[in-house]
Image (cartoon, rainbow over all chains, first blue to last red; front, side, top):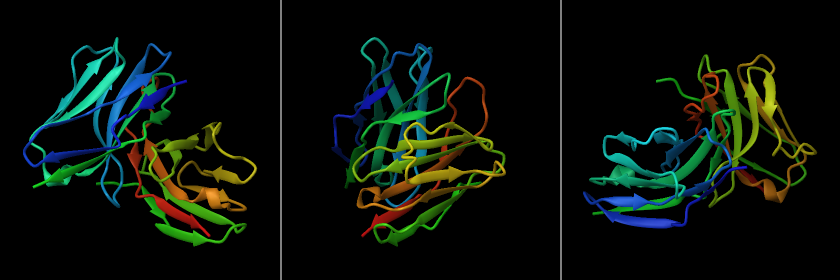
Length: 114
Length: 116
């Protein structure tokens, strides 16, 4: 079984600043993947970034990057140069190699202020 | 860009009534998922299809919920009878078939169900 924990229900960041969203996970699988999904208000959920557990290098996608600490089972998301459009719910999720089922955390609501 | 379509977007129903949701995945996506997202929580998988076959329905309350994907394309999720606790967002997602590798799931806009 997999569990994903997001301990920050809400976060706030000023425009152009950097914010880090936390996520911890637990899995008995050796082959697994981690994801951050963004759910804007009244819009569909979209993939922000993914990390394969077997890769040591942290994934990056433009202003989004992760800090993957495998031994600590930690997977945080860093958003640089925050923009108003980044305001959304962010969900951390894990999936295994043998099944594509995703297990989601409870989400972090990110507010971006001027 | 192709998207996952869902209808209706909003549904209000009375307790004990039947309700159905429809999902049309991205063309060519063999895998289809139905998730339930209770307010303030993350999505929880209800059922996963590979083509027309169910591969995981372990979290589907089978006494009242049913799902089908008869031709391996679009899908219907039904609740009968609806209960107050079924009020939630029902999300559909689809993905391509890749062996042994969780691949990106594309989500639809969801159906928000309110049971009164």
